[in-house]
Every structure is written in C-alpha cells, then in structure tokens.
Image (cartoon, rainbow over all chains, first blue to last red; front, side, top):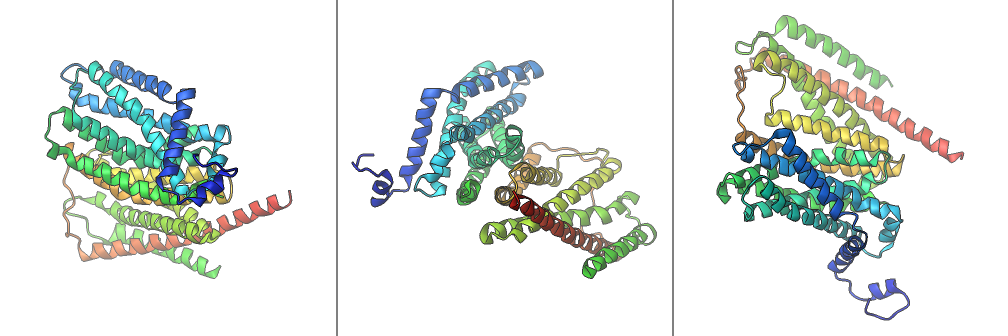
Amino acid sequence: MTEKTDNPVRAYSSRTPSWWAPILAILWKDVLLESRTREMVMPILVFSFLVIVVFNFVIDPKPALVTAVAPGVLWVAFTFAGMLGLNRTFSMEKEHGGIEGLMMCPVGRDLIYLGKMLGTFFFILVVELIMLPVFAAIFNLPLFEPGLWLITVLATFGFATVGATFSAMAVNTRAREILLPILFFPIAVPVIIAATEATRAVLAGDSFGDYSRWLQLMAGFDVVFVVIAALTFDFVLGE
Amino acid sequence: MTGRLTLLGSSGVLMMLLLALIFLWVPTDIVLGISQRIFYFHVPMALVAFLAFGVVVVGSIGYLWKKSERMDALAYAAAEIGVLFTTLMLITGMLWAKPVWGVWWTWSPQLTTSLILWFIYTAYLMIRSYAPQGDQGARYGAVMGIIGFVDVPIVYMAAKWWRDVHPEAVVGPLADEGSLESKMVIAFLVGLLAFTTLFAYLLMERYTLRRQESLVERLRYSHV
C-alpha cells in the first residue's frame, strides 16, 4: 500500500483496481510464505527425486530400455509431485484461517483463484525445473531439449488449473488427502497422456511437427479449464 | 405414483420382450456369432449411461444458476444411475470381448474413455458423500459435474491419439458397420426403449428419495 489511509479497503476501491494487482498480491503472499516456511518446494523436490530413484530400482532401465521407460518415470514423478503441491495449496490456507482472509478481500473470486493457481503452478514448476537436469543425468538423457521444457510448462499449468479448484474443495471434506487424487487423476488423464507421449517423441529425436499436436492438446486443456475453473470458483468458496 | 408404476411395469414387459427377441427371434450374426446378442443389452446401457451424465451436467448448471435444490437432487440421482449403467456396460463389454477378441480388456479409445468416465463420476459421488452436508456439497458436486463433462471429449481425443502411437492387435474380427439387419434394428430399439424407461423410473425414485433425505436432514438440524 503506497497510499496513506486508515482503511485499506476504501483505499483499494477508490482507485481503479487493475485486474492483475490482486493476482500478483496473492502470488507474492504465497512466495513470501514459502520463502519463510519452506514447506512446499524442498519436501516435494526430495519426494520426486525419491520417486525417480525408486522407479530406477523397480524397472532396472538398461541403456536399451531407457527411452522407452524414462518418459513414464518422469511423468509419474511429476504427477505425484504436483499432487503434493496441490494438497498444500489450500490446506495451508485452512490451517490458520487464511481462507477467510482471502474471501474477505474486496476482489473477485476469479482473481483469488488465478492468484492461488499461479502460485501452485509456480512452485510445482520450480521443483520440476530442478528435477529435469537430475533426471536427465540419472538416465543419461539429453538435457537441453527446449521441447522438454515447453511440455513441462504446459502440463504443469494444466495440473494447476483443475488442481487448484479440487484442492479448495478437498480441503473442506473428510478424507481430504485421499479425495484430492481421486478427483484430480481422472480429469488430468489427457494431460498425463499428452505429456508422456510428447516427452517420448522428444527423447526419440522426433521433429517438432511430430509431437506438436500433443502440445496443442495440452494448451487447449489449459485454456478450457482455466476459464471454467475461474468462472466456477465463486461456487467453490461459497459465501 | 401411478405414472411411476406404469414406467416400472412397461420397463419390465419390454425387458421380457427383449429377452424373447434376443434368444428366440433375432438372427445370429454371421461374423461375430452368438456372442453378438449381448449387444442388445450392452449398447442401450451405454447410451442410457451417456444420457444420465447429460442429465448430471444439466442439473449441475441448473443448480449453480438457479440455486434450486430440485436441480441438485436431479443431478445427484442421475449420477448414481449413470455410474450403475457404466459399470454394467463395462462388465457386459468385457464378457463379450473375451471370447471374440481373446482379451478381457484392450485400451481402445472407447474403452479408455468409458473407464475414465466411470472414474470421473465415481469421484463425483465420493465428493458428494465426503463433503459437508447441504449447500456446500451440492456446489462441489455441481462444479465437478461440469468439469467432468467438459473433460470427456478431451480424454477421448488423447486416448485416440495415444492409440495411434501404441497400436494393439485385436484378436478376432471387428463388427462391420452398416451390416445390421432389420430384425436386429428392431431388437436394438426395443432394448433402448426398455432401458430408457428403466432409467426414467430409477431417476424418479432416486430423485424423490433424495428430496426426502434432504428434508429429513433439514428437520433434524432445525430442532437443534
């Protein structure tokens, strides 16, 4: 707040509010919280590393097998990592009544959704961008494939779009930790398929044109669900 | 009440007629043989399941729009029946696939989508039973109903392309399109009618029950 006033709400509404300011404020709040508590990125990072290591023992990827199994291993690890991140998205708001604070903000619920969604997207993406080189090193795969990074961004955004909504729902239910994956996985199936297949194509050295349809599918998923989730988030939060 | 009994009765009569047609009247398919007769159950159940999920999305949007509990009860009732018919469709499909394709299951786009459909609406029912009673659960269900409905075509497309990448040999011949004889068409239509009336009956019963459940719930909390 740059303006001096006793009432921050009035100060906010007296200006013409830009639609992105609340989104950035919520995103910044989450980044700040993470930088102080470190409850999200580090544990998820270690967890997804563990998943990759465990898979390495279970399937024993010999050099001839690596390109066949590596995409699957990578996306199982990333999906689970995303799952953990989504669990945190709203449970951390629930713990200290943060959700009530958010709901009292004089901004549209769609903007609250976008702020929380971008925060989740950002944290999961950070984990994945650190894990990609580790993964590439363990499986002796090419690291600097721009296609791989693009796939990761599109898929993670897709996870975050539906995931943030489901996270906000699951946090208010009984058995919330188990309910979130049950809601999330069936809806995320297209993204998981597309990301795995596109990764397989990249690692096999296919040209961009060969796997661009998977990218289009993920981009379509991202756009459709960010709109639907933003529109319906008002109903998820309730009064 | 009489309307409901009429529905139940006509569904029962149509089922009997359908069984008689399937076992005594319809010619055996030249290519697929005797096992093809399960289609008169399998296909109508699949279509009724899709109809049920269509009702779920209509009820969900209606609930969010009008805040009418009736719409929510309609969506919930349809979701339960849709999951029931999807389960039966998957089971009858597997029973047919084993002798004809030689496998219980194959990841064709239709089968994959049907299974994911089953998962989506099972998740719908679970969020309904684990969410807090009343308004909140209804809102969660409605959002899940809408997201799930939009997701289905995307799942189908992904499964179709995925199938292109992983071709799988199907053992045995596939049904030739457009080879339905007129007797087969009649039996199929009877099946469709039988299952649609059954669906209508179940939907009305479950809808009424659901309304009564929420009434009981409200009465219980109004005395606390």
